[in-house]
Image (tube, rainbow, N blue to C red):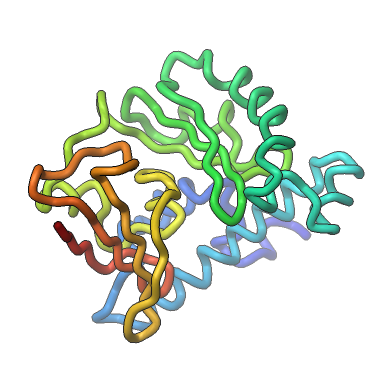
Amino acid sequence: MFDFLKPRHLRYRSMEEWRQRENITSFRHPENPRLEARLQRQFEELRRHLWKRHLKQLTPEERKDIKAGKHPSQSHKHIEQARAIFEEFRSRVAGLAYVAEVSMTAREQIAFRVRLNQEMGWRVWHEQIPPFYRGFEVFVLFVPGARPALTKESAATLIPNGMNERDVYAQLGTNATVSHGKNGEKNLTYLFHLNAPPKLDAKIDTMTVVISNGAVVDRQFGQ
């Protein structure tokens, strides 16, 4: 299908391009539920569109494994099989001057995460760091210097309202306890004194990120 016949949000080459061109700074708009629903729908549609385009680039064997649910990316149980592809991906991008860290995250599925060492527009890295690699989703984020120490105040900047759930995992890691609250909310609780990378105030042991409709709506702290 010709691009001009596609819905406008499906003409973009990446999620970053879509958000920049459409000036999307937040997915959370309680004052405008219809806008919020439209943005969430377009987000999922564009992500599926990019994924389908990536599938066409895979080998027949890789497509067969994905269709059968046997691809290494589809379960944390396959992390050993995923390591070879991850090392291939890391060797491809780790040498880029603006890349600080390349890692693999595993929860229900396995994804690759790239941390940049300098803030830059998506156009700089987009051609060299793909959104998907051999069936694995790739998250790209910028952390200035060392991971910042978290406080109740700085947490709102690091994990702002409207951030997508996948970006929360990319920023804080996937080692969170998941529970469900009222009104269908999902709670991601991180035990910072045990295993999470950032450091909270000395009196704070946990931070719970509250997710509603796929986006952050609040942060709560415990001792």
